[in-house]
Image (cartoon, rainbow, N blue to C red):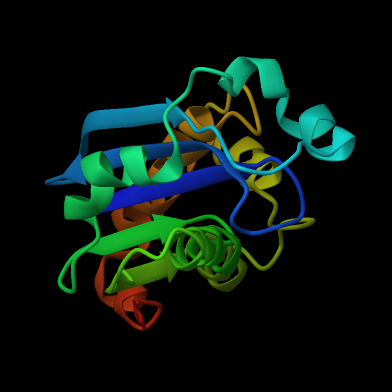
Length: 178
């Protein structure tokens, strides 16, 4: 399997307020690379978001802006590339809103939500939050709400599902993000 697992953290409730982004790159069912960056949003931080992910305004004071980060990661978001996330509507929404906010061209790529796959394959789990799924599958999740740890955990969930159920049942979960 080849895919990229994506995870954003946001400064507040505005979807374009990305303050960190991580990508975990998987080729031939192996994690081959990772990308992580803090992002300086052009908006204020909300205390509740800071409480969740631990990123403060001071932490991003010298960080690149979203357009600067996008220059480096845009090649991963192409029509024939699969980009996954745990609760993909959130992360896809952050990406879409950030691109719109900064007047950058929309990204077109294939997407899959590991919340949906975990609900299908593991209906007996108490819930399908990232930390719960990882705990149930014995997948390491060191710092929940650290974008890099979350993207790696998400990648490992999909790899686990592919190894145990095959790739064919996963295909029905792949959608075009347009």
